[in-house]
Every structure is written in structure tokens, then in C-alpha cells.
Image (cartoon, rainbow, N blue to C red; front, top):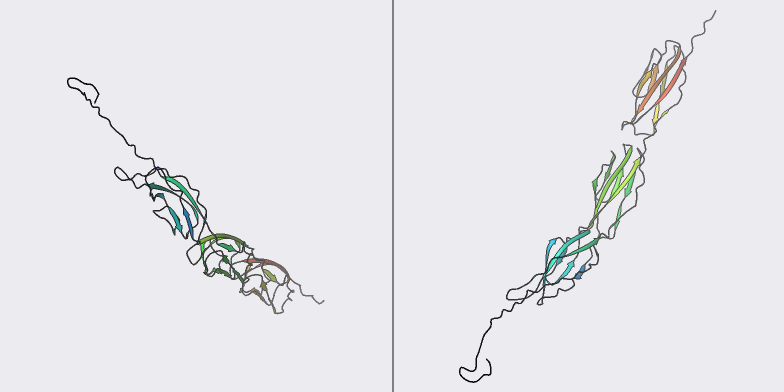
Length: 294
């Protein structure tokens, strides 16, 4: 309306206007999360969102939190983790606007590392000895007792076992190199694994005696072999050569009989233990020819 006078005064006019209120940009600032320890209570509050109408609510939109940990609507990450590792996830913040709202932020990525406090000992295992009794206990610290143990991978030597109490024991019957993975879980489910390697040397089976007394032509003869270094009982076999005519060699390792011919006789015997390990020994028997009286 103007301030003119006269006919038709005052004069008026109109104009239309549009007022646009832009949607707010909700900002969720970065937060550096402190590391957690499995089995230990944890709590961390995210840096608060801004740009909209408070209060804000927070939600997990991608990835996963560790087992035992949750995100509250108030932006608090808390709980007692039961799994270790690095966990990546995304969170959004939503404001309290009405009307065209509420408004939600773009996802913000986070990374939470959960350390495993359990330590398995010993650091390494002593090598077992073939055919000898072995007993080695594992131990665990840093978690919530009691602990349970399991064999996760690898194969034990024949004759040995691994108990849920963490005891590796037995009498090994297989030489070779072995690698096993053992797992330990504490009372609240936190677990860890460890690889152990050990070597069982092949046995040296000794056959005794190393030389045999010589038979006498026409005289009864008996000589027993014995073995050590392996797992009894042992069985014996003749693998080459020949024993004197009139004599025999048993699987029990007994050379016996009455020789009926003179000469030098060389042969090789094999001793095999109860687990199949073996060794051999060469022998020579000399049977003198009779002296002829003239």
C-alpha cells in the first residue's frame, strides 16, 4: 500500500514468495574406539551427532559387533565380548525432527579390535621318544577358569592321546614329524588356538649278540637272539643267506639244530618290533671240518 491521495488512493499490489527450508545434514563425527579384551566388560560412547534436532538415536546398519557387545540407541557400545578379532561395522544417527523429518546421517564406519587375553603354555613341547612313556600337560592363563582343551587339527602319533584337560600322553609307536593345533576355551566361551610341532626319532633296534658262537659239526646247537630299542614283542626273520644244513631259525629268534655239513655260512636276520619298526644284523657261522685221523 502506498501513501498517495486522490482518486483510488491509496494503491496496493501483491507478490508471491516461496520459502524453502532445506533438510538438515546430520553429521556423525568419527570416533576412535579403544581396544577391548575378550571376557572383560567394555563401554564406549560414540561422539555425538550434530546438524539436526536432538536427541539423536543410533543404529547399526552394516557389519557386525563382536559377540557379547551391543549398540544402544543412545550411541553406547557396551558389553562383555566373547570373541576376539577385528570387527568392522557402520552406524547411522537419526535426529528427532518432526514434519518432513526425522533425518538420518550417512553411515559412519568403525573398527573395534578385541584382544584375546588367553595364553597357552608351554611355548613348545619336548619331543617324545619312540616306545617310551610320555606325559605333557598344557596350561592356560588370562581367561576365566576352568578351561577345556581340544585337538582342532593334525594327527597324533599312534599310541598317544590328548585329553580335554590338556594332557598329551601315551607311548608313541610312530616315528616322524608331527604338527597339531590345540584349542582352549575358557568358562565364558572365549577361545584361542596354538600350533605345536614335535619330532619322534626313528628307533634304533639293536639285535644281540652281535656275533654268534660257532657250532660244532654233529653237535646240537641253540642260540637265542634278543632285541632292544623298540616295542616288544619282537619277531625275527631270515632275509638273506642260508644257515647250515640241519639247523633252523625260528620267528622267536632261536637258531638251533645239529649241523651236518662244514663250511662258512653268512646270513642276515631282521628283527621287527610290535609297531613294525625293524633293523637287521649279519652273522657268519663257521663249522670246522672234522679232523681225519690217519
